[in-house]
Length: 279
Image 1 (spheres, rainbow, N blue to C red):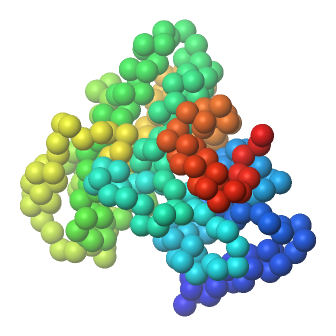
Image 2: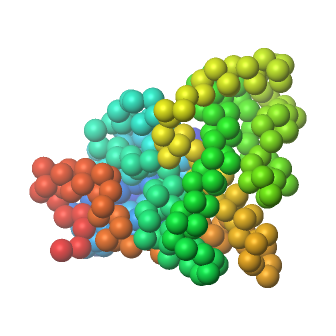
Image 3: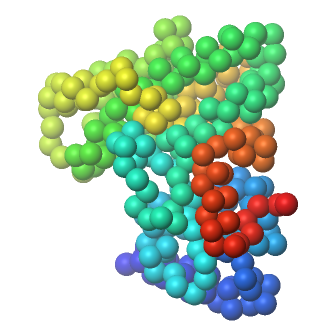
């Protein structure tokens, strides 16, 4: 009830906001969280857009179905939708090119290089991008656990898993058995499953042809990368939140313009004769 009440309050607040002269004629852009709003606010023009967050993709999708008082679109993480070769559930819900916004930024060579030069300025570009690939590889099995969990509604909990503690720096990997065991231990509401059976089931969905940028989770990526930086060069520990903020700062409108997401938004704005981006 509390979540439902909060949702209704946000919809009411948006409706009131669009009854003001300040927002007349603007497009409402809904995103998942406050960090997303901070990033996308850099790209959309305030003259034609009001941006707000809804605390989760499900709420964004529900809001787009409920809102009828203004032109509204959503911009959300794709999660596993591209991996599963599915389309967005709504024509006006737009998705990141890769799994999520954190990986969309890390996928961009320019922004990744700009951030990494702050920490690994002595490394060559190829060495920097090799660390990026190794970080993806390190969280691949975790990506498969997350995907299998979503496909089968197992209710596994990932909220309190300390990846820094599990991550083996020298081998640059997370031991699979230990990872899954820790997740199961911290998932009291999960469907009863034997560790060995779950391991076998997850191994069965592993495919070397899968695109890791569609499989892996950006928050996991930032945690491992922050751990790597803290171990090798930082005088004190760098948190994944701090690192994510550095990446958002390094990601510019010109970078965003190279994405399929930007092109789709431009096509939508042209079709509807609406103004989304700075001229």
